[in-house]
Image (cartoon, rainbow, N blue to C red; front, side, top):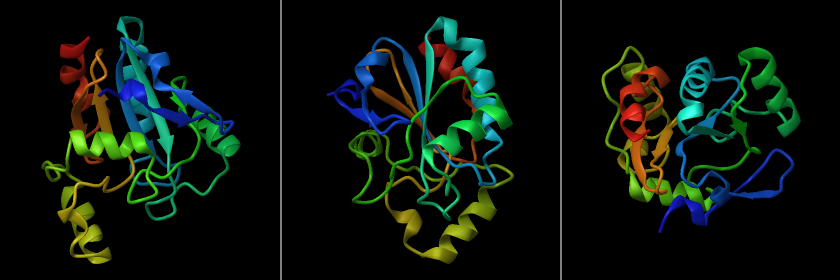
Length: 180
């Protein structure tokens, strides 16, 4: 099985097959416009511009499941990404990425790359405390924990990495380079 068996709703709500990205290194990231991590669009765009010609593609999947930090319509989200961060990579339609309502792609990626905890960073304690305040059991499952969880897929469609929201996109650069 590979990610190429899945489709995602695009900005118009039509399903787009991931087979369109076959042979590329992918970063699939759930995003939000009103999040403390929203500035990561800048780092994602920098990676995209630097490595796109070598085969890197980025697919953003906006979600409103975490603190309702993505309240806009698909049109508003597209505009926000372009105007505020100059995003040129693919931004799909707003979707669920956690729990029973999650897109099948996210269920698959979570199974392939379970949650291993948050790595040390300047945001780890804050995010851990916040999530424990929501539900003390929240950090015990493998689900996506918050906006800007980044899954990395190799050129064969295998989910080979998971980077939590506290990991900045440029901190993934050496890992991405090994796959290109």
